Image 1 (spheres, helix red, strand yellow):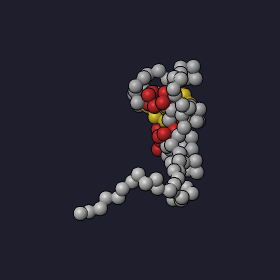
Image 2 (image 1 turned 120 degrees about the vertical axis):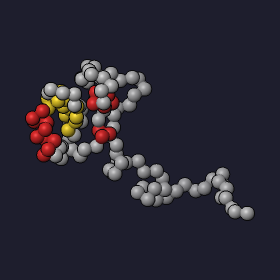
Image 3 (image 1 turned 90 degrees about the vertical axis):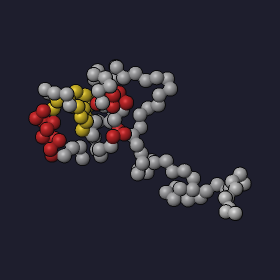
Image 4 (image 1 turned 60 degrees about the horizontal axis):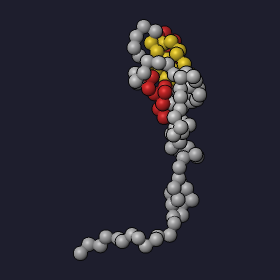
Length: 115
């Protein structure tokens, strides 16, 4: 997948590769300008961009992320792209996409009835 023909041409003509993340996404900056963009590995999905690269793309930081500069807090989990629409997506019990069986009612719900 990657990019459209127009994006590829613009990247070749005006872009400078600044880095790549662990998912294979490539990040570019304009040679003579302020523009930044990403060319995704596979299907374009914004949730595939790790937090450090997201900060760089949105000008929160000017420091290009690297393996050394990207630090993780003890409470941070490993970045996972959005899994919606894939076989690995979350499917709660009772979901039509899951097993389709709900837990039995516990009796703590009282249906509203009009007077």
